[in-house]
Amino acid sequence: METEKYFIDNDIKVACVKASSFPMGIGDAYHKLGATLPASEQRKFYGISYADKDGNIIYRAAANELHEGEAEEFGLETFTIKRGEYISEFLEDWKKDETQIGKTFQKLLHDPRIDREQGYCLEIYPNAKDVRCMVLLDSSTN
Image 1 (tube, rainbow, N blue to C red):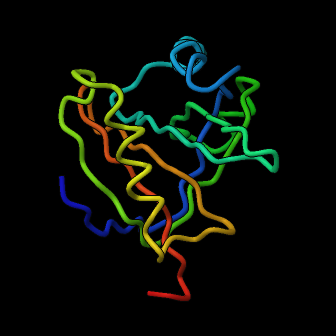
Image 2 (cartoon, one colour):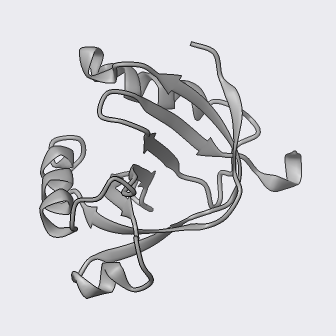
Image 3 (cartoon, helix red, strand yellow):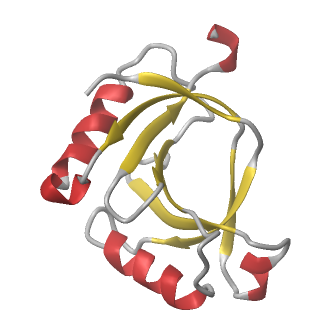
């Protein structure tokens, strides 16, 4: 797969469920998120991950709010996906080989243009079988 730039026009406030562990707790986090928020065709799902100060990976299953305050209404954490330019790769039918997500992020994280201070790994799920893997670029290098 080839990397490409991807631009998010506006900040996106999402409701989140933190995975109890990485990577084993990811499926449970999405299950809890889906069971908590009302189903809707307008709902988009995301995965957000980053390393804490000790190098442990923190992962959050996330979905866009359909109205202001929805996350708080259901007792969920919030996160704001930043507008800006990302380096990305689109993976088709990722469930055939789930390891390709991690391999793709390892590749993207080696790009010298990424925002190492405030960046994070972002997954956007446009449908049930595909994913776009992205890392925020440093706006001062673009």
